[in-house]
Every structure is written in structure tokens, then in C-alpha cells.
Amino acid sequence: MKETPTTATPKKILFVNTKAPYGSSLARDALDALLAASAYEQDLSVLFLGEAVFQLLRNQNPKDIGMKSLAATLPVLPMYDITQIYAQESALSTRGLSIDDLVLPVKVLGADEIAALMGSQGAILSF
Amino acid sequence: MSLLHTVNKSPFSKDTLLNCLAICQAKHSVLLIEDGVYGALKSSPCREQIEQLSAMGVRFFALSADVSARGIDENLIADVTLASDQDFVNLVVKNNVTQSWY
Image (cartoon, rainbow over all chains, first blue to last red; front, side, top):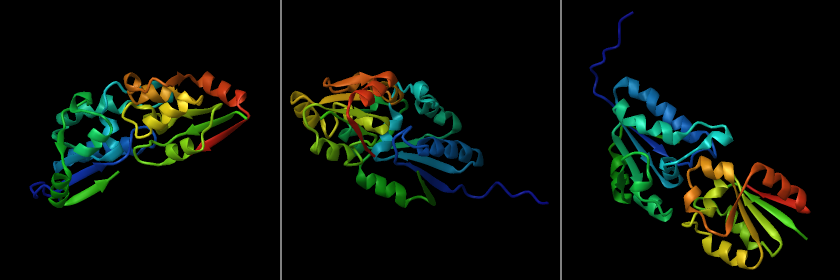
């Protein structure tokens, strides 16, 4: 069997998070999918919309609800070469959050920039 | 008649808490659980209603384990008291009935 060539142009894939952590498994599923996808050398980016900005908060301690901390895992993204990390400006301000409250550096985007980001992708996965 | 309300949705994305507060009266207790604890944030869209109802005698609680999980311990409305799992059980036992908003 021939090996698949790995020289193909990387595909631009955007992972869109829309849910708060722990209320459902979607936040964890998105992170697992993102880390798995990072093995395939594609052009990955991740966007936190609406309630999902709560995933980025520091000091999460979900031990007593029997879950693993998302805030403990999210900072590894740059080590997986995932550096295009975005958060929705209005989602942060509505919730009284600033970038100082977050576990990793993110680029804050307005509505027009989010539309442009989505429009430039080869695929969008929404969680 | 004492009534316990539990709410498990964030008021930033659902109107569940708002609907609950609309029928709350003195002697009722409201326990915020799961994503409902985001309703206790100082930036909560329901902050004003919570403070008004609290002044009228409605008691507000947030489940401590869910608050800590989400890292929002330091940023809650003063009228909301943290409740342990044991407090949750006591609230259910102490009130005549429980209305679950979800």
C-alpha cells in the first residue's frame, strides 16, 4: 500500500466553541478533537464565542464535580502549534471579563473580524 | 408556603433564571446549580432582580462545587450564599416543594 503524500497544502480548519465548560461535555470534546487534529499538520485556529469564553477563566477547580479542569489543559495549545486563539469581544464584555481573567493569551475579535475569520476557512467545526 | 427553586442554565444564554425570578416571592429560596451558577456573577443580567428579591426576603444560594469548578468564587453577588451538597439536601427537606427550572 502506498503512503499518502504529506506535502498537500494544509487545510484551514476553525474550531468554534459556543458552550460553557462542565454543563455539557462539548467543551472537553472540542479540546480533544482540536488536540487530535493538531497531529495532522493542518492550519488550525480556535474561536471562543458566547458562553464559551467561560472556558477560558482562571482558577477552575472541578474536582468536586468529578471533572477534569479545562483551564489546566488549554494552556498547552501553543505547545501543539495552535497559536491562532480567538475570543469574541462582546462575549467577554457582556460577562464582565477581561483578558487578564483568562488562562492563555487570546486575540479579541469584533463581529466583522469573526465573519472574516469564518469566511477564510476551508472547514468549520462547531461545538 | 416555602418553595425551593433550582436553576441549572446560565442567564447569559437562556431565560430560565429570568422566568424563575418572575414568579419568586418572599420565603422562596433559589439554588443555582451547574451552569446556573453563572447567574450569581456580579455581571449577571439578573443581578438587579436578585438584589431586589433578596431585599424582599427571597434567599439565594449557589452550589459551592459548581462555583469552584467554574473559577468564579471571587466574583459573586453578595446576596448569594455558597451552599454545600449537604446544604442542598437540607434545602430540599426544609421546603414544602421543589421546582426545578431547566
